[in-house]
Length: 327
Image 1 (cartoon, one colour):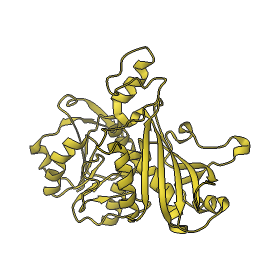
Image 2 (cartoon, one colour):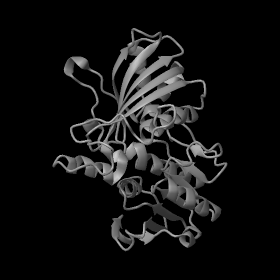
Image 3 (cartoon, rainbow, N blue to C red):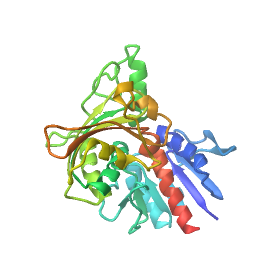
């Protein structure tokens, strides 16, 4: 009997998690949906069956579950993930709390597999996921020496509050999630600022890239920017390779990967946009060109749906791979 729990089931990502459970046809005998006390009692349909949202408590977290997927924020994960783990569950967590813990796997299924030193698996940052998916073919064929990220991240990355700030800001409402209006604006500020002037979001991308690709020698820097769109993140990557390559060779490196779509035909104005990536499982790349100012360096424009591959889809892909291996 397989018992699965979803924590944060009523949030923006939580709702997508439920969609992905259906999409990937995850098999379970019992499904429990948890959220905050405020959301308890709500009804949600999954696979044609109605489930009542339940409040997550310490007592409930000590029940026997086989798998728990969490998308309820760092403080909730810090408190409850170890309780689920101690009770025997494998926990797949969407928050940033566990990602850089040495004994916790940080997983993108197309790239690496869990070693399960602990029964907590971390889902990477949304922008990191799509970026490393695009970097992996380049690392495999040429080696990656350095990467500079400049992100263009949608407001859904901030959950319901970010979406509200954009939609209500169109009517002149003051922001409640962001420090400045996001409507008709861009903010070079995602998460808190650190002492060195970088933000936590930028630090996440820098550190997580090295951990997922298992190469601490890669030089990584980032600037993360919030833009006034609802869905999908875009990342401009400036990538320095270890080996010499041509633009055609870089493009060919992406071919043959069903999870990567190359859209790169400037003569026909073909390049990926957030609208192209919305509600799609693949990562899109384009605007591939050589940087004339740096040796063996290329620009790659990368777009992905931050709520799918950047969050819920990646989480459920991890879950499916674990369940398939246990069968």
